[in-house]
Image 1: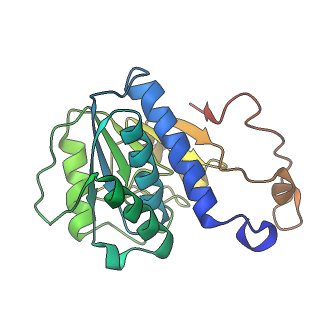
Image 2 (image 1 turned 30 degrees about the vertical axis):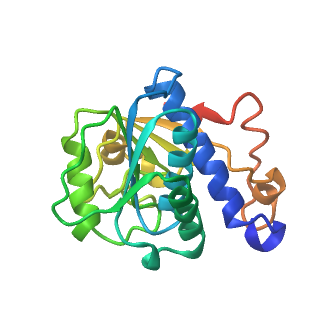
Length: 222
């Protein structure tokens, strides 16, 4: 998308976060986020950036949003750092978590810690936040993949998020469909980040995908 179509990472991240916020509102917040407590757990990469977009939109819709980051802004990629700077200008509560951070009680936890870049079992602050998310009574909505699950092999590491629902992007990842991973994924939704059908049909992929999202930006897979 970036190299051949000049669709920027910022555009894709905005689409992902918008769809995540829409799903959070409709599936978990009763169609009205006003006054509801949402905790967004965000990592340093693109997954975290999508979570920050979701936080912004839910805040705009009246939710009480708190963001916990795994690291300070200096360790974020350029595009996630830009998203964080917007939240800071808006006055949203954003904090850097420590190894023993206690998570506040919430009505919804958004897991945007680790995406497809996972390399082995999570450790340190991300691992602590994963365990904290699993200990909450609130539902957990994961972006792209539950943090701690390998999107290719379907390996579920210790720790890994046990999501109520997962919203993956563009096409379902192979690893999400293994019996082991399905227990961590929960309900699976697919979101449109505006991948051109011609990209799928090109020689690198050779996939006849068609207009998957003709009826909605987010569709349920199972």
